[in-house]
Length: 118
Image 1 (cartoon, rainbow, N blue to C red):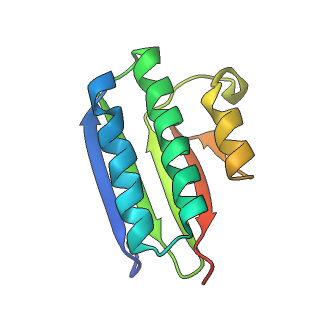
Image 2 (image 1 turned 135 degrees about the vertical axis):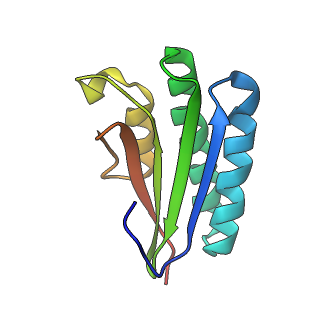
């Protein structure tokens, strides 16, 4: 991730179902720091849970990384690793894109942004 003056938060967890809640709590905590509206916080936690669950269920990795970048008007979330040639085969992306239009899979991660309302 490029150097930035904006706060970056990173979490790496084992790719196991027992750690999905950890990723969800992490997302909620970062959203609180970014001062997101509660509805957006709830959507963010759901999106992170869905992506981490899908990565864990694919069984492709030993660890899952969740990183966030708090910018003046948005919170950018990147979760990976994800591998596959067709992002459409990654069902969680449909849910994330419905919650956060513009979500994308590429370069081994799922990325999306939530408005901070700033």
